[in-house]
Length: 279
Image (tube, rainbow, N blue to C red; front, side, top):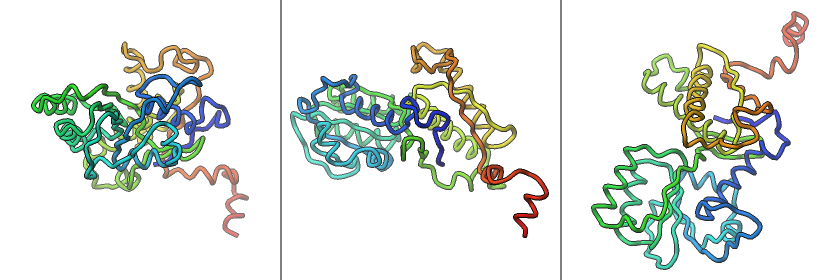
């Protein structure tokens, strides 16, 4: 699933790539603000990631960029890793059960003195409870410094192009034999990833979508998720210039891939245009 951040594509505030890099820099700075006075060489760190987060980082940072931001080692979470003392570990993984259990195992083994846990999307209460129980049983909870939901479950390919990194989505959504629970899971995954894009851009858009199809389901659920979030106390869009109260809100158009927009851009729906295509 790929999308374009359009409308104000050349504007700084809607450059998805720039905003994504800024979010990753804050994460590598132990979730502290980054400015011109930030010294990356004072706090060296080890970066631990899974497949999805590795693909995300590789589109934004080169190895030299990671070193510039104080990363001495970058390792896969499932790799055999040695114990390293006196260096903080920054985990950046998806909130899956296998990743949570592996983090708990690393804490129990004492691989790193301090662990900063960052999840690419919001971790469920069930997984938080699983993590807390596992580290409590091994008496290693003190090794976990912070736990953050990063809302970065997408891959930035350019300043106005990103991918949700989901495979066979169109096929599954249009499968006549698809189970309703599977359909809901796919739509919710798309909604959560689009919500992450909006959090990264720090914008609350006006949503436009068709009705009675998959795009409509995504639009309606995304609207509800935004509405419920804006009503909560932990509002990630507070005091932003393009929040829900702004007159300069961008538009988010959600369309089904079955609609061939290229045809409308090439010519109008008239008989002469149809004859031109045929002849």
